[in-house]
Length: 414
Image (tube, rainbow, N blue to C red):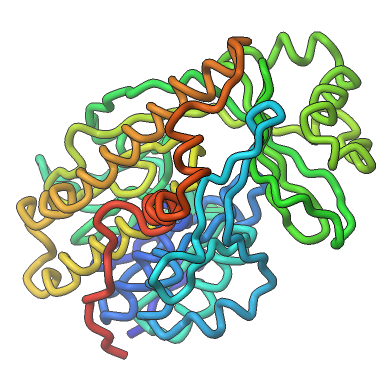
C-alpha cells in the first residue's frame, strides 16, 4: 500500500481511510494502532518536528502498560528517562507524601520522566514499519470538507500549496485550541481553571535532588521535575496575573522562585530573560458531543485537562487505545458509523469527567487557596495520606493508572 507525496506539484489530493489531525500523544498513538491494524491512515502534524518545550513529559504506568502490550516497552525504556516512584511535596515547612507508585501491581510501578518529543519520535520510528501509516509534517489542517452533514476529510496547508485529503473518518487530535472542533461547531463546556503556569528550565548537577516534587508556600507554588541535567519547572500563578509578575521584574521573579525552591538557586541565572519563560494558559473543558458523521474528537480536543497530576498525556493515550479498540474493524464498509463513534465518547467520558472533577477539587481547595495568601496548612486528607502508606498506594493508582484504564485489543495486521 503506498501514498502519493503531497509535495508533488501534479498531485494535490490524497485518499485514506482515516485522517488524524494533530501529531500529539492521542494522534500518534491512534495512528500507530490503526496503521498496525492495516487501516490506511495519515497523521497531519503542522510543525516540522515534535519539539515543543512546553509539552508534558510524564509517562504514567497506564501508558507504559500499553507500550508493553504493543511489544514496545523494552525499546521504549532504552530512551533516556528518569523514574519517579514517590511523589512528595512541601506545604510550607511541612513535608507530605502524595503517592507511592512502588505499591502499584503493574508492569512499571513508576512514572517515566521523558521529553514528549522523544515519546512521539519513538512512535513515529516504530510506526514506520507499517505500510498503511504515513506521518505528514509541515501539514496543517485548515478546513473541514463536507458532503451535506457528513465530514469527508480536510483541506491542509503544505509548504507549496494545499492538499485535499478525503477520509472515511477524520479524527481531531489537535488539542485544546482545536480548529477542527471549532469548524465542526461542537459545543464546549467550560469547567473553569483559576490558575496558569509559567514553564521554564534551570540547569542542575546530576547529583542534585531533594526528592521534592511540589512546593507550596503562602502565595506561591512550584513543581520541579528532575530531568537529570536540568530542572523542568512549573511555577503556578493565579489566572491572569502574568502582567503583574512581569511588572515586578525578572530579578523579583527569580527571587520568588528560589525562596520557594532553594535547590534552584545555583543555576537560576539560566532564566536570562522573559523569553526563557513560557506562559501556559490552563483550561479545563470538554465537549458535550465528541462525534459527528465522519468526525471524532479525542484527547485535549475532546477534554482539555489541567496540568494537575500530569495526566493529560496519559488520558490522551487512553482515548486513542479505546478508539482503536472500538473502531479498527469498522472500516471495511465505508468507515465507522455515527453510533460507532459515539461509543468512544460513552467509553471515555466517565474517566475524563472524573479526572477533571479531581483536578478542580485540588485547584479550588488547595492550590487556589495557597495562591490567594490564605494561611497554608496541609489539608486533613493530605495529612492522612502521609500517615497511612496504604492510602499512598490508592493515590498512586488514581494518578498512575487512572479511572477505567484501557488495554490494547485492536488487531495487528502487517
